[in-house]
Image (tube, rainbow, N blue to C red; front, side):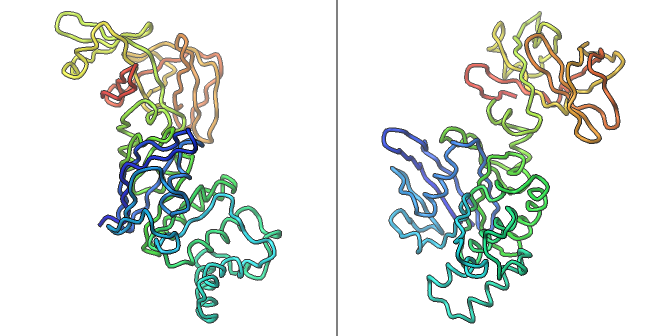
Length: 361
């Protein structure tokens, strides 16, 4: 069942256009993630959903009701702000209770709900303390509790983990997933980190410069990106992009690079029009096999840098003018300067139109 629908949302700040005909739907009780680099328009979009910002054109529907002119307090939406905005002169208890006090809830109901949400977020020990005594992670949890204490239909979370360290972020992801399921509510979660979006979202929306590039399940976003931007933005290390061209010999088509040739005849109906033209080959680092001995259909390369990630390493090779990233094998060590061979998994490669950035395969 649809909880939220955006139709052709456009936003100008003065003469600067920051959102371009944004349209998507969010299902009831869905964990929906919006990801994109800073400046993509994520926060503006959340503020429009909350009613804190007015779109220049387009419509916002919540539970099938048009809410363009509905006051924020009447939309059934609660928003977590990136800057936290805790009151420094109020205890954690008073900060969390504030939305209920404004709405004149009875004191016994306020106390009951504050204790419930504090227990859910494991911050009961903070309730009598002031914000100046909080760590970054503790402040984040108190601000989140203040957002979640409202009995909202949709919770908007703007970069909720941006101010805490990497270890806490990983732990917090698991807690967010559990929290959303426990509450049984719709979460719309904004993050600049695509890995975080893939880890959390039932579906993921990728934004760039105010435009929606792709909305789909995490595995589809990762394995079947629609364009070059999504392909390279989602994934760490990012996808390798190699300039090639298509050549035809008799009835066969080949993808050619200075250092290798791949038979792509099986894609003939899709790429026939590119014969004699450039195409980009996209392939993720984990889909390239490194070997210390020559193997069939492999390319000889020289290792120029290594980035160790515990049991595995990211290997960097120079392939003409392109830096090629490859994931090393578990437990293997790779001395810089060593000669290696790499082999592409041809079942996992993508062919990309150079001018439009559209992923063809």
